[in-house]
Length: 444
Image 1 (cartoon, rainbow, N blue to C red):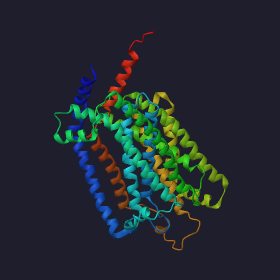
Image 2: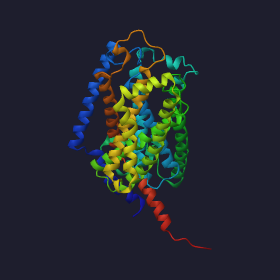
Image 3: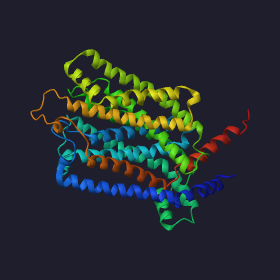
Image 4: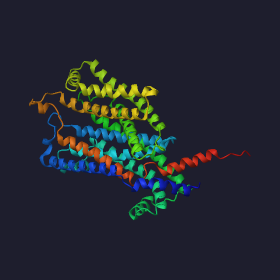
């Protein structure tokens, strides 16, 4: 079968997934939109009444907004790193998961910084960060890093989409007019000639190397915002590599969950196979060992030092946050290691369950890094009312947190309605490569 006929065949296979929406999908989209509307109402309340509707006070000035920001940004950086590795080293099985990773990367970079805006008390002064930046401030570094990474990842994502836009432009004559116009515009005249294909692959490979570097630098900057302070629990020399490993841990886990859901509800078992889950599970096992080592080193060094403020922080963790501490640092680390270590226990469902446990454990870990530290300052505050000393998230914060997740999922679904989640161009490239390997060679 020639390439043109193969492209038509792939469009016939994937175009119905783009155009048709099942009743279940409509219900889920309705739930997501309803969640976003409730979140918009909560946001209006917060804008009108200020941060008094949240649990943040003079002592604990950061809450779950910052935790969500760190989580989504670390997810984006890990996605950028993983995606760059897959493309740069031309991993054989990357075609089935590469686009999932790329979409997760860009959407996380869009959703994450929104939580920073929710944490700022005076949004009317937001433009001052750009008009009067202080290069000495790690916050300025973080803004530059996030914006640079967002632009780089968006360009990288678009480059990987161009061949599929061209295939859809040339083989979807029966599609709606708006789709045809959209595909024609986004394909930017790409004709899949040998020279164009070679140039696009070269540019994409170069961008993948840049994205890997951006991911490491940007997430290190985020870690330095904490580690360059004198707060107990934050002033640590291993925070940058610790954050990078934790980011990869959450990134691989979210990719596994996304693969499972997409595979099940879109019936793509032929493309997202068990081998992909086994490979992702093996990677998650290695990263969980590294993540567990860094976590142990961080807490052990604080416990062994016997510094007063570190001791106070550990006492807070072992009393007020005991069960969260156990889940984050024992269940969230040891359970994945035990299940993934034994080959007999590695099934698609068990690997997915491990990924869910890892995500919950890592979110709790982020909570334990932020809140207990702020609850144990160097200087005690004058007002000792419990609501000023301790932090408890309000319904406004929880609603806006779920709104962020709902927006992420909704945008993911909408992108899947524009372009196939399995790159058609990647399938064709793999088939071209396979034919070249089968082609007999002659000796002179």
